[in-house]
Image (cartoon, rainbow, N blue to C red):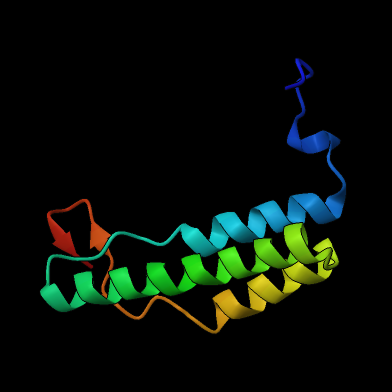
Length: 94
């Protein structure tokens, strides 16, 4: 392992775009207290996690273009929006 620190601003734009796409895909708001919200949250997080793993696998194992992969993950994420009621800090759901 290298002792050199690598920061995001030193990475190629395509690599940063992929990192941001993975972050955004997995950064979903917590669900409200209703069982249905919790179920939908879990399902959405699982689907988006699988999408992110598929994209990372394509890049790391198949040599796919990083910029294209980032765009594909963004499109897939947009196709899987939050449909449940998110948690709010005022004691419940929105």
